[in-house]
Length: 173
Image (cartoon, rainbow, N blue to C red; front, side, top):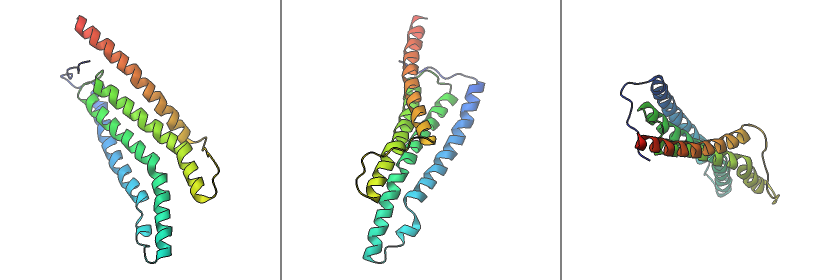
């Protein structure tokens, strides 16, 4: 597959993509700062004054690290979306980079949703008490994000086929 040449005059799609590129850049920054605040809370970091407190603080940091993994994965998906919007803004449509970006967004949402639905509740359950096996958090936005991530992964595969067909058409014409 070859990269398509950018369109010379910005289309409506390109203009929208450029706005979304800006909005996604702001969202990446805000989410990254929020994620850092959640993962490394100042109150916990400043509580290292005696050995008992140190272990409780380390336990709290471990718990928070487990809890922020889905958001970190969503942040990776948002960063991939930012790159894809930039490419759309330059007029790229059916390129390998667009397909990879779409697949990356879907994978990030899929893995983040899976982590939020199954891994976080299971690990936190193990930390809080005796071994209980697998704990699932079914329902709510996590499950929706997981399913939408899977849909985007599938859509990425469809886009790969469309890009291959576009390359065949371009070679034929």
